[in-house]
Image (cartoon, rainbow, N blue to C red; front, side, top):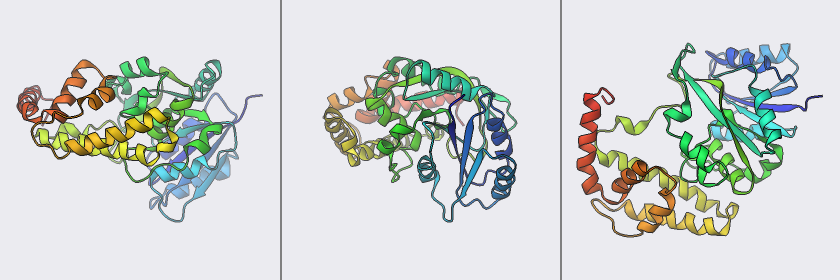
Length: 331
């Protein structure tokens, strides 16, 4: 008999697409599932929809929060409800292909992995394809393939999309509580990073999710920096994100091996230092190299100029911006 798998679905004002997502989960080829849903104080008809489904399918268990937790803490609550050895994460507005659970379970077992994640097909609100591959569009595929067996995969930034995660219950106590002081270290980033430090990750390049993009997405394919017209705006955001990421690591340093504890502190101090620099920085380039040597040459150089040589980067940014504007890739 198939082992039972817990599927964790966090909802908030999801009435528009919720039924199609729940239907796609209930109609999986892998039938032995338990769908655990936590609604985060929805104000629309989400709760009525959930009550309807809970009554007609005994595999569904719904929790109705009395105060808003936010999506990170909502997923933390759901993880605490896991009873079976394997769990999956789900968003409220996607559509899962029928064989998603079955294929992920096969890979988890065949590769003896602690966490499996995969690619997605990006679609619009009507499920028309926007990008055939999310990871290709976000320029993550090279890094995933190269560093799938290393913490480096998710150390500098997140390469794992939460709604593709299948993992094991045995890791939950190590993961919790989730850091919640910043939106720049989400639950999927934290789960995959912490497991990668001592466990094994596996990747599925096939797309078993239609990843729906619409006006109410909490997280999606939007690249905020593409709307900026000045290098200073990009630099401020990049440093803000990295301070949040490495600040979170430092606050949770005990979860990291000793060598990374030291790097976490050096990285945080480096970004704190360059935050005050306006035109040039000539200090601690070795820290930058250690952090960014996992990236492509172009990404490395671009970020080096942004972080350490904004005086030079400013002119190059303006030239690049106007070229992309002429090509219709910037507003």
